[in-house]
Image (tube, rainbow, N blue to C red; front, side, top):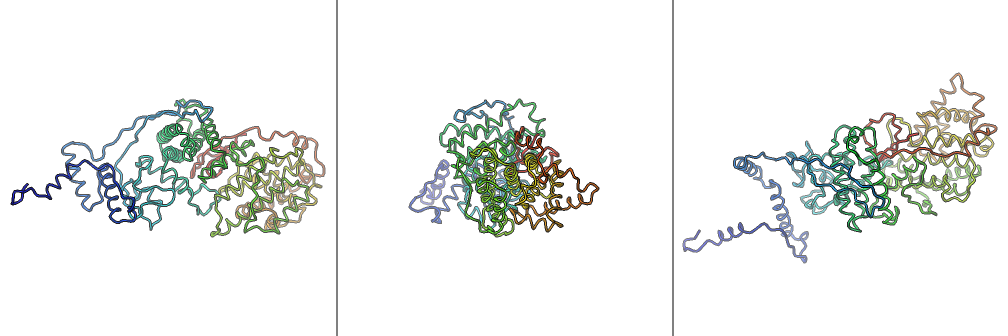
Length: 634
């Protein structure tokens, strides 16, 4: 087109040249004028990102986007004859049956899987970031849900720690199914992860765990696989999602293993840990119908366990993983739960041969009460190596009391939970003589150590609204009863409150179990001899020892109700009670021999990830350990 003088119009010529230019693949920004400090730079960066996004997805943020989209759909349908949102048909993912057995993670190939797409359906774009899709019925994507109301992806280039730039690449494609899994993880699974965090004050699971997964494909797929397991158990998910994300996680782990640094990175270790928990959950009878026909190898759990152990060893041990707090904590909790269930050393121990977790006195530490309990132990001739652990336990109990009683307590719940696991490992090591040169112990020392272990497990577990049995305590309570049967009343003459505390802890641990009747009858006799006439008097005596009232006071009141019923019964006190327990006048030879020749645990149970919100197991012997269940199989 020419103007009146026959000269081509400069504006039109410039427009035609712009249309002929290919799409710009890169945006160069002057480093001397950072984009975040320049208004024009921010505009250029946003324009470049949005242009590329529009080329990939048929949407726009302009005011006329609706009209343009309608016109585009009508023209496309008239010329092509295709639906608005074509579906990408999925292929059937390979199952983990092809996973080879491995003995060393350096040569481990978790399997080779082809890329498989999932069903895509028409979805709603997030009104905040205008990039990711939302779960049906929601207006925000899972990433925007994480932000506080004052934050905005459109005004902030970088979000809180652990989250990616909203215009960066997500490690997995977010469709309606992935959005559902992410929402389930963030709203259902993450709040109850730290058992002692009863007010859900910690945001570490979202920032340190989920936030790290946003930058690692293997980690994210393994997290989605774990969420799919939870959803499937509660009847809201599909088994296809479990298999698909497990396959993708294994493929991504394989790719990372070719790089010496990425192979043992935090994200890759976290992915293997998640897959270990998934494989343990698939051992449930609940999944038998789904897994029986797929030919999965029975040693999948051991493949991941051996791989996890090797990867952590190459990093320098569990204590060396300091760059990822949640990863270190989760492995610690999982390993400790395994150790208690089987009475074997933790498969990854945080302890060195001379380790002691003694910390400076807590702000809530009460020297008078603490010293009273230590004096009781000394009066009972408890050796110093165990009294050192008792002193550490008193600090832990003080922290826990402060945390439960004060909503403004500055303590970190993750540190408290870690402290409980370290204490459990220390008590297990003391019982097993792993680092104790003194091989000969007295029954009263062993009874105290087992009761201390039961105490730590009980006060640091998740709060349950129902009075459910503590399955992880059952094997410990069996050994506690054997030790108490090997003790006579003269051993308690100098420290009767210590006996009262041990019997109360044993009775609380066996509530609802077969052994409860033995403990409650022994406790009834002890209360009678020590002049305890009410639940308040019982709790007052127990509080002079190591105690966490928030968790144990309701249980102590239940014990008193049982004691009252027993006192009113026709067989309230029998003479046999004085020949079968710690108040007996002489220890029977058979009981002392049984204690001397004990084999501790002759069974072990798999650790099963916790299906939050589900009660499908019935009497399966499962112990709630926060992130996972421990199945006790005698």
